[in-house]
Image (cartoon, rainbow, N blue to C red; front, side):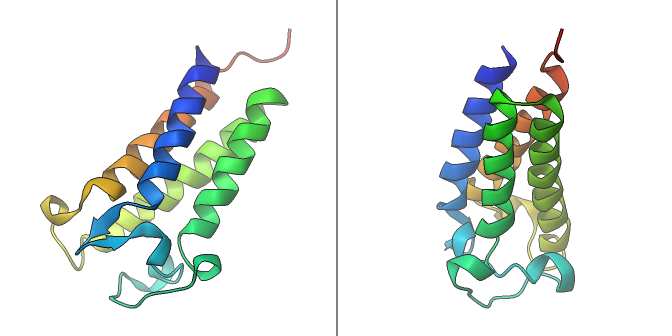
Length: 124
């Protein structure tokens, strides 16, 4: 059950990263610095965007799904923390109602991965 939640969550995060988050801007164009200094209207290359922590979280989640519960949980924490911090920062610039499907997909997917990490049974 937890592996299915993880797979769905990872797919939803990956899908959401390339959809519009706000003002028709996709998540892979949003600067990583938005997490620390507040949401701006600047663009960033893929390696300097929110794609980086999302990709790291997804990679850890997939590896943790097959290897160790702790790695999966770490991936879920990175994904959820990235999304929660970004949404809190985004509230300073836009209303929550103005957030588009990509942001909600990435947030929901990250919470699903986090739940999968919590529900995954440990080694017996």
